[in-house]
Length: 307
Picture 1 (cartoon, rainbow, N blue to C red):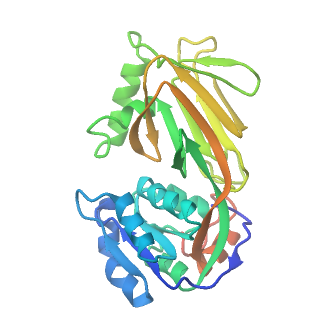
Picture 2 (spheres, one colour):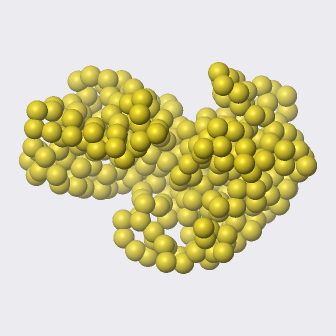
């Protein structure tokens, strides 16, 4: 929910392509009929089938002349399409057809107006935002290590997130469990060894009012948000600390389990994070941008954002 963001008028793309994951968000895209609605707006719709490689489909669309790329799916899929948009300097459209749609909320797309978000292709406004980079891979929201990084690796995570997180926490943080062998240094030059949780985000999350907690007030600050929760057996048991940085390096004795925009990934022992400022051109519907400017934290919401 980027408050006060400056959106610029732009001409509609001539050959836009929307990639649709019909299974994402429990079938949200299918229920909204996005694949059928898009062509009526002059947007080519490409529905993902099981086993298809999204990155390959996107590359094929660009080779065929696509001049704007959209994704209706979860945040992990959004990042794949956004990566290609950055590489080819194309505008990117986020259609909130995932489960949580965290990126949509923070960038200003009204999450409950799924079909209305398609207006980005025909009556959109544009701005440029940052992305995060972890070992050369783009992330739009965050990378989580520790309890969450272990939890997303588990087969039952998608269907029972809360229970899986609790079970993982008991194992990772229990009396007989070894803390993740991760080391990093914060902006005070304090070293954190084996933190229970490490969250690195594309721009920092709001921790206090007036903004809604768990959202990012801006996506164009050129900084990473870093939050660490030390393990119970650390120097200050369970202590938490947050700061911002342009880049961050962590070291581990073994490969590290991580969740990158909610996707399970194993990273090498040396991990480098960096902010990539002003590289992603984002298109959203004009009325969504107008609604976003009226938002001021969790207390106020436009009529579009109300459930």
